[in-house]
Amino acid sequence: MTQRITSVVFLLGFFINAGVVDAADLAPLDMAAAEKISFRGDVWPIVKRHCWGCHSNLDAKGGLNMSSVALMLEGGDSGPLFEAGKPDESLLVEMITGDEPEMPQKQPPMSAAKVDILRGWVLAGARDDSPAKTTERKPVIPDVYQYAPAVTSVSLSPDGKTVAAACRSEVVLLAVESDAPPRRLATASDLLTHVEFSPDGKTLAAAGGMPASFGHVSFFNVATGEIVAARQVGADTLFRGSFAPDGKAIALGGADGAVHIVPVDGKAEVRRFELHSDWVLDAVFSPDGKMIVTAGRDKATKVCSAETGELLRSVDSSTDLVGSVAVDDKFAVSAGRARLPISFELSIALSGVAVSGSGNGSRPVSKRSQYAKNFEGQPGPVLDMAMSGNRKTIAIVGAYGEARLYNVADRKRIGQVAGLPAPLYSAALNRDGSRLCIGSKSGEVRIYQLPDGKLLKSFAPVPVAESAE
Ligand code: HEC
Image 1: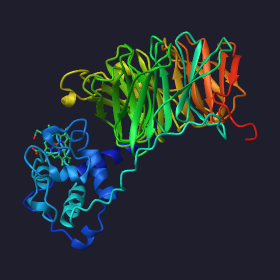
Image 2: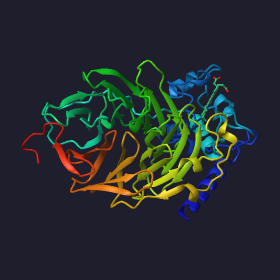
Image 3: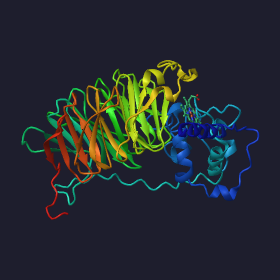
Image 4: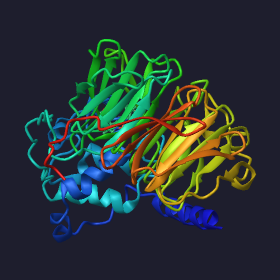
């Protein structure tokens, strides 16, 4: 029922937004109202949502980069985007109005309200109220921390013998079966949000960034601890994601609402897909590498083509944000604050949908009730979900002191580990699901043997001042 109401509201929103603007009868603008329009607060969110995906540093279609006011004034192949004070004689307004506005390309026309915000801003002088660019701040990594940093992400090597834990700006590598000292690897991220071993265990990715400034990914050689490649990605922090099955790239969600496909090869191009209307919190490849399942703060779980980024289907809209997804060859599982992980049978959800080629015209033929099945409810909001490398088992953790393990195929609970330090920010399984690793807000990492739940190791990844309590 909730699902139906949500869809109806969504559809209404869509039709209102699609109200076509006619160039001939552009409404006169109110100067007093126009004066109040802020570039940062009003204009930039519109540009970022509707234009920036194709007009940025990474991809300036038609020669036009809309990343800043100065660049807009510079314009593209046909000249400046506008002249301050004259919106209705501008290329900008010409492109976004009319019976079938040319821009945004391949998307529904923008609403009249949004068009008027852009027009008003240009009319009032196209003022740039963006904060001055902060001089690039290098994260400071203390030798000894005053307080234990939260463990925001953990990963287990495929053999389960090495743990990677993300603590603020550094990744710590620790051997589970020996007393070798931890290896601390620094990154340029202010806060790391995702660490992951590649499927062959040889490369470690560490992703994060600095909010409202940049996303960042570092790839390390696990054997030597050396950086193989590191790069800034987009203009906002990155969240979670997963390696492609061939280990050549990692897909990561972003606070800029995009899914970023970042190749390990530092010279290969980063691709970005615009699918969500808000933060993308997780992105996971299907086992054959052909699809990516994503979820985010807009409460939606979506399936897209990994090759083209084309949206194949929105399989669900939850009642609350969805922070984690997992995929095997039959099912996609999503979990988040709503406490109820849901499994989607992909063959049914995508029946009638063309997986490659022009999917724009193809309509899904199935209904949600045919392909969506609930897991049991969790004791509290879910904060992370991990899948074993063989994609048979998932571990679910959250704002409570328990990790629950499930069989993906039938959604049955196959085990749990209790007495954990709540809240748990992160979980990981190794390839065959014989080891579980958890990371807590309080800064603890623990590794358990499965299925018996025997504690193998518990440690604080970084040194903390003894007096700190
Ligand atoms: C899906 C991709 C896409 C999106 C989104 C998009 N554009 Fe474009 N835009 C293009 C492509 C491709 C071209 C160049 C070829 C063409 O004109 O069709 C272009 C060209 C332009 C040009 C002409 C540049 C020149 O100097 O020749 C303008 C102006 C423009 N876009 C404005 C916008 C605005 C404003 C938005 C947001 C409302 C937007 N675009 C969104 C793909 C896109």
